[in-house]
Image (cartoon, rainbow, N blue to C red; front, top):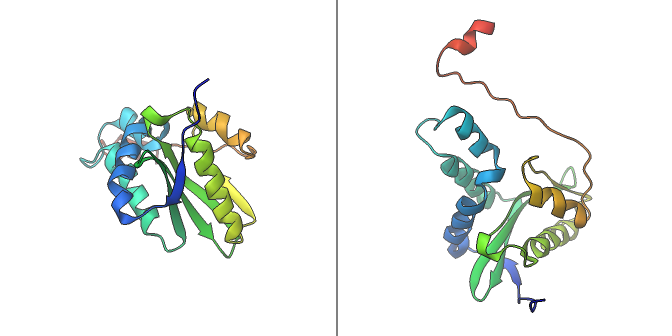
Amino acid sequence: MRDPIEINIRQATDFDHDEILQITSEVFGPTTFEKNLEDSYGVIAGKSWEWRKARHLQNDLKQSNGECYVAVVADKVRGYVTILLDHDAKIGVISNLAVAKNASNQGIGRRLLQEGKQAMRKAGMEIARIETLEQNPIGKHLYPQVGFRKFATQHYFALDLRDGTALEGE
């Protein structure tokens, strides 16, 4: 058994954004609906799935009701979690969780989830929510281990409007 690594969790700064975006591009491909859309319909509007996912992430990072925490190992950002806090509904959402591929299976994702849950509790949230796609075995395994309970399934549908055939069914 290998020695546990030292993982430091802290709030992200603007200086972390490039590393966060790099980790996002590296790990989200197999587990994002943006990549699924591209696999089914090709590149949309000349923009890659990475561009769309990065845009979603950048929007999360700008939210006044959001927070981002990074996991630092040996002075390098190895993962991150973003949370959005709905103070009126008292529901916090973990909108992104990612760990660099070469840092997986070291407890980083688990620690980031714990930090996100703690930040939500401290902010007065009553429920923490997270979602994942069926094709994400890590999320499906990890989230229940840290206390999340599956309570609903969502289905994503898409329709290609570019070729005109979408109008035939109207």
